Length: 154
Image 1 (tube, one colour):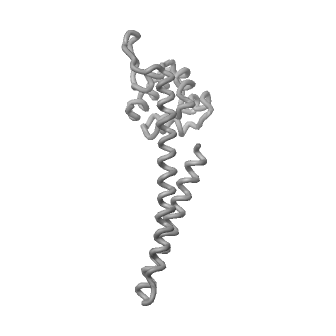
Image 2 (cartoon, rainbow, N blue to C red; image 1 turned 45 degrees about the vertical axis):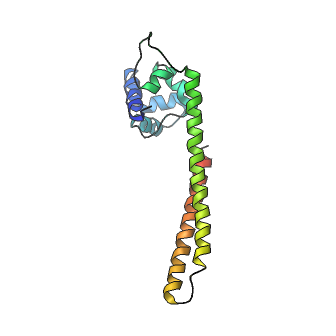
Image 3 (cartoon, one colour; image 1 turned 90 degrees about the vertical axis):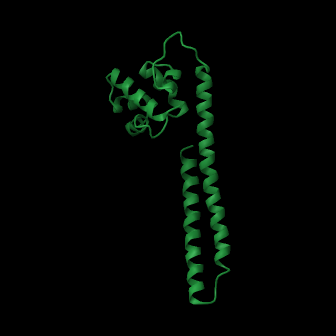
């Protein structure tokens, strides 16, 4: 799956149907910014929107994933439901990866707090301790943000 090819294909098919990004977005119940992200290859359509998108564009799911129109007699390795199931699993794994990254940042932040406690005494050591403490708080907040954003988008 090449996101850029798929995005260009979506744009081409949308234009063939004489639809603007806003019109297609309205038909699918999403924002036109989402359509723009697809067409620029920044992200893939969510598995839940793939069938309605293909219906609106008059293409098959296989054609969407290949980023080009296929001949009727071409051999297909996967059927359309398998492709949607695969997209769902990929997107679920991506969200799990983001959640794990957030959790890892929080754990590293906690470890850095413990490390900052070992520095004390001189002014320089107190400075290093404060610096590590600040970095650990920032790291934990970033982890919480990533987890929150992942849950919100779920």
